[in-house]
View 1 (cartoon, rainbow over the protein chains, first blue to last red):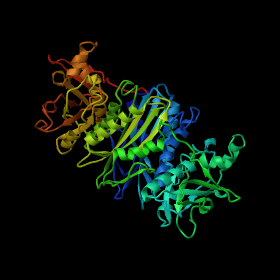
View 2 (cartoon, rainbow over the protein chains, first blue to last red):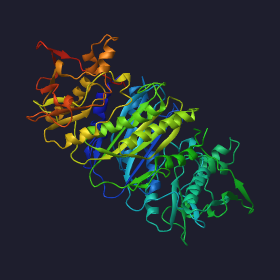
View 3 (cartoon, each protein chain N blue to C red):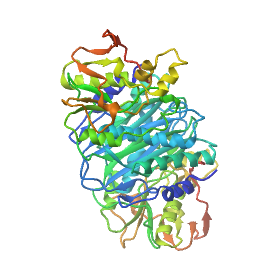
View 4 (cartoon, each protein chain N blue to C red):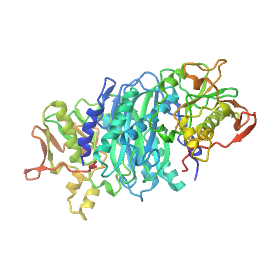
Length: 306
Length: 306
């Protein structure tokens, strides 16, 4: 057992400081040098028992709490500058677990060029949970999820499905890809895939429909959807096909984007180059199979019931 | 039961928008117009069962989640601009409770001139908890807690103790007082009292000792410590005196500050005008009673054991 105060004092040294941090960990709030450009703000939780299990190593819990938020910044075309971490731990959490959690937070933030400048550590009668707030800046334009229009090609930055086998804990937030997309005129709507391709695509279409004042749909090409080997692995023991896993599993943390160039997108690798479908004027999600048959899809994926 | 997506879409309308919000609720992250001055960042949780009880009305839980963070901004001399709210609710939380929570968040943010621009709503196997991140700006200088020096007078902005009787849920974050202090050259160290006068004063002295490279203490004047009527009320049934409640209860959310002017501080009311003690070169906290006897105090208050 260690007092909150002594622990917090240690965190200031642990996370360090730099010239952008005018007042860091240990005061009532952090003060940082604001950039001239707009700032980008996001916060997502990681709750043990929801976003990972009690068996997930503490380092991985900490890393995921950071990476989820960096994926959101990536999907806006932003780069991360500063993090706040609100950590709630059950009484009696082993010191080694707590240290592992903060080590995971620090490692993930260092790897991606940002720094923890504040937050809070407290106790909870529930399971451990970590809420990271990420603050970033926009080197270029903001990438919005409501910017899809009819005729746009639909792309993803990587293979999908089966992330539960481990990828949901250790993924690369697509910060470089977001930067690349923000610099291209042909880029339409962009978001990250956290709840599954179909559900997130439906969200993108709904947002874009509202913005454009028309009802949009999407037609996907079954043969073009990139299936992760983990999805194929899962399919051998589940009642679903590998394609179903790729379309609905979620926590892929790849970017989903639309594209309206004559030429396919370059500089994002082979998977991102090939369109997986197209935005259409017929509402709904549609799948075209190898024989050219078209069937309607239910937008399924991961959604909390509130 | 309502889907997460439909609920989030409703929140965008509920919290509204303004000219500083370039991309608001509903995208991967919020984009806001950064001020030219440094930005101030803080996040503190409210956990049902820790910071309030299961019987606390939902509106009060939401309000407290906002107000705690605004109190931290006030203590930095900052004013609030934007909030993110990460809400975790047990499955099956009644819709009325959820609505009350968000109504409380909105009412508190409107009252103090800031706006919710993003966040996340999810489920937890534990009790409800809300982490608010507040982002603000500094109209003047930053008020630090490590700026106390020997000879400073010690002041508080209001009467202390007994906040558990209700004040811990409905308090005024001392934003105007923070602004006033930031504009005065005589202001030394400033922080808000969340864990109790003695514990927070010890924290202020420890931070200031580190900064100055000398070990500081404080001598308090028993007769000058402003005791809230609620502390007197508690003392009639507890084993502690009203003064003990005032010194150790916590969650007062008043500002604790040091002052090095020849004249006492004006413009903050009668309570803030009268010094409650002085920073001394003798380490430790000391209490001088009406007879002039001096005894050492234990820095007690509210501290999580981690």
